[in-house]
Amino acid sequence: MQNEPPILLPRKRKLSPKNIFSVECFLVTMLFVIAVQGTYLAYVVGILTNLERRFGISSKKSGALLSFYDIGHTVSVVLIGFLANDKHLPRITAVGVIVSAASMFVLALPMVLFGTQSFDESSMSQHEHEYILKNICDPSRITNDSEQNCKIQENEHFLAFCILVIGQILAGIAAAPFNTVAYVYVDNNLADKTKSPFYLSLLSSMYAFAPAFGFALSAGVAQLSTTIFDVSSSVTINGDEWIGAWWLGFIIFGLLYLVGAIPLFFFPKKLLQYDSNSFEMQQLRNECSHNHNDHEIAVPENDVQSHETFCEQLKAAFAEFPGLIKNPVFTSMIIGWMFGSYLTSGYSTYLPKYIETQFGRSASLADTYAGIVSLGSIAVSTALGGYLLAKFNPSPRKALLFLIASWSIIVITYLIGAIVGCDEPRVKQLLIDTIAINEEKFDDNLKCSFDCQCNQVNLFNPWDLCLCADNGSVESGLYMDECNTIFIYVAMMFTGLFFGNLFFMTTMMVVLRSVYDDQKVLALSFASCITNIMGFIPAPIIFGWIIDEDCLLWHSRCPHDHANCVIYDNKAFRQSLHLTSAGFQTFAVISVIICYLFSRKFTFPEEEKEEEVYGDYNEKQVDSFTLQSHAIQSVLL
Image 1 (cartoon, rainbow, N blue to C red):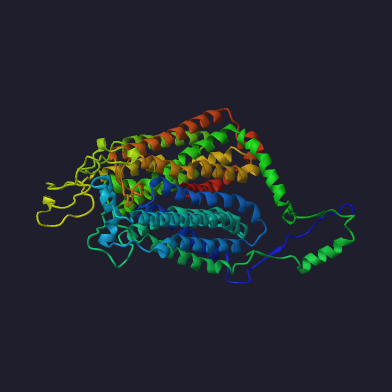
Image 2 (cartoon, one colour; image 1 turned 45 degrees about the horizontal axis):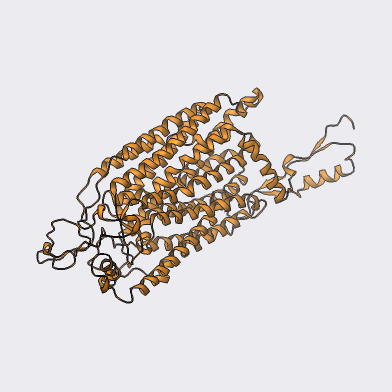
C-alpha cells in the first residue's frame, strides 16, 4: 500500500458540441458586430459638421458630444470586468448589441422629433434677415415675433443635443462587452489555445479596417440632402446651408446591430462541454472514497475555483494600485500613452472639419481625405509596426528608442502642417478690425450694400440694387479661390503619420513587460482607464474650444446666438490645430524619454531570474500578436 503511487483522477473529457454553434461561428458573428461598431465610430466623426449645422452646435459642444461615448464606455468596461464573471457571456454580449441598436435609433430620434431642415428660401433666411437688420441696418424694423421664434429654436437645439448625448452614452456603455466579454468567451472555448492570439487579433483588426466604411458612408450621406428628395435649387452641396442625410447612417447601424444580436442569444454558456459523470470517473471515485486516508488523491488544478466575492476582488485590485504607481517605467509610459492619444481623439476628430473649411472642400470630399490620412496611415502603420515588433522582438529599451524616433516625426509633421494651407474667403463687409468678437457686435456705422460693384467678392449682406448681378441672380454661400495645396497637405500628413505611428504598439508592450504576470490584466485596465479619462475624453473638448476661438462669423439665426461657425480665420485655425497637436505630442515624446531613462536602471520581471527565461520566446510571440491587435483597437477607439 505504501509503495503504490497516488491515484490521479482523470481530467474531464471534452465532448463535441451538441449543436451547430462553434467558436468559429461566434467569431464570425462578432466580426460582423465589431465591423458595425468600427464603422459607426468613424461615421460620427464624418457627419459632425452636418450635426453642427442642423442643430447649431459649436465645435466645443460637438467635442463634448464625442466625449460622452468614451465616458459611458470607460465606466462600463470597469464594471463589466467584475460583474461578468461566471455569467452567460454570449447573452451579455447580445444584450450589449441590442442596447447598441437602441442607441443608434436614439441618435436618429432628433430627425423624427424636429424633422429635417426645411429649405424653403423665405423660412431659411427669416431669422438671419432679422439678425442683419438689428446689427447693421435699422433696428426698428425687427419683427415682433423674432424673440418668440428664437426661443423655440433655442429649446429645439438644446433638446436635440441632450438626445444626442443620451445616444452617445448608451452607445459607449453597450460597446463594453464587444472587446472584453467576447474576447474572454473566444479564449475560454478554444480547445487549441495556440489559436487564441490569431482569433483575438482578427477581432481587434476589424477596428482598424471598419472605419474606412464609416468615412465612406459619411461621405455618401453628405451628398444626399437631409430631406432626401425635397431639395431646393437655391441650395448647393458646397453652400453653408447644405445639410446631408446624417440620420440615415444611424438607422442603418441600428438595423445591422439587430441582425447581429439574433444569433448571439442561441450560443450556450460554454461551447466546450465536459462529461464529469463518466463511468471511469464514477468508478475511480467509488474505489477511492473509502481509501482516502491511505492514498494521496491529486486533484487537477482546473477543478479548484475561486469563490471570491465582488467586494473582495475589488479590494484586492485596489491593493495593487500603489505598487503599480510606484513603478517608474509603468507610470511614465502611461503618461506618454495618454499624451499620444490626443492624435486620434483631438487632431483626427476635427480633421474632416479642418479640410472642409481650410481648403474649401465639400463635407463628402473632406471625409474622404480625412479617411486617407487617419486610416491609411495610422491603421496600416500600426499593423505593420506590430508585425515588425513581433518578428524581431526587440527588448523594451530598444523599442522605447524606436518609439521616441517615430513620435518625433509626428511633432515635425505637425509643425510643417502649420504652414501649409489656404487663406480664408474675404467678406467685404466683415472687417476684422470693426468686429468685437468677444462682444458679438458689428460696427453700427456699416451701411447696407446699395450699388455694390462685386466681381467674385463675398458680401455679408448684398441686400438689393446690387449691380454685380448684371440682371442675373446672386447666389448665397461663399466664393473661395481655388486652393490646391490640399494635395501637398494630405501627402505630407499621410507620410508623417505613417512613419510616426509605426511603433505605437511599444506603449502597450512596455506597460505589460514592466509588471508581473499576475498584474498584467489590472495594469492594462488601469492604463486604458487613465488614458480614456485624461486623454480620449477631454481631448475633443479642448480642441473644440480652441477651434471656436478662431471663428470670424457665426451662423447666427437669432441675436446673441453663436450656433455653428461659417467662416474661420484660416491662418489661426491652421496654426492652433497643428501647434496644439505638436505641443501634446512633444509632451508624449518627453514622457517616453523619461521612461527610457528609468528603464536603464529598471529590472524588468523577465530579467529577474534566469529560470524564467524558459519558454519566454514563445510567450513573447503570443504577447506580440495579442498586443498588435489591442494596439490597433486602442488607436482607433
